[in-house]
Image (tube, rainbow, N blue to C red; front, side, top):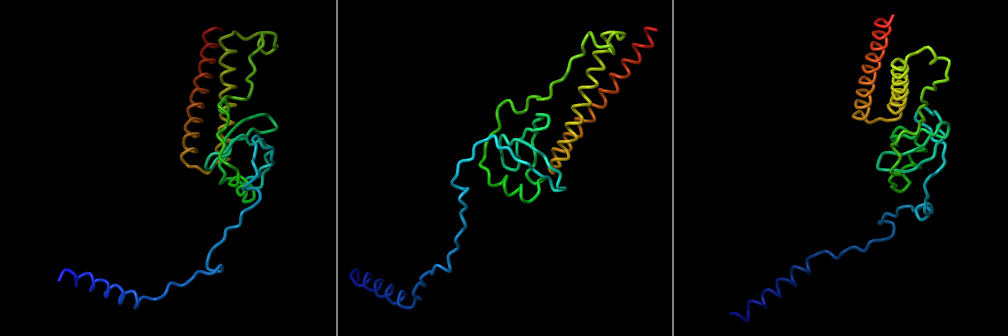
Length: 193
């Protein structure tokens, strides 16, 4: 019996395979081919100077310093201000261009403030009559207002709702601090009349 078992197994396998359909050969029309651009093989070197446009078609002359999924890291040519732009907020042509760029982490000093904040000069006519207490608070107010302008611009350039909420919260905190500083100035003036 032991010798007949493998024979039956072989016969069953042959009968089973005889009833199966022959595999169809694939033709070139059945396979998909994906177009490969010549750009895919060229090396891109950062920074890249480019005029970017948002979905409202507003231009931004900038240097692209890096890219992460969904974001470009740029420096505005006009004033040297560095910030992130959501790729989804760009026009379709610039979205396609940005998505074709390789991933490139921005430089380590990217998030450092690039706007020089002027310090009050002792020789400035507006500071001649002001005590240092008031001048320092006015300078802090000016810096917070500049930071709020930057945050508002960053809000306009992103579609990430979490990022928008975070930046709006920071603007609110800055406004509270501005109001506190103004109240300190008024209190100082009324106490020192």
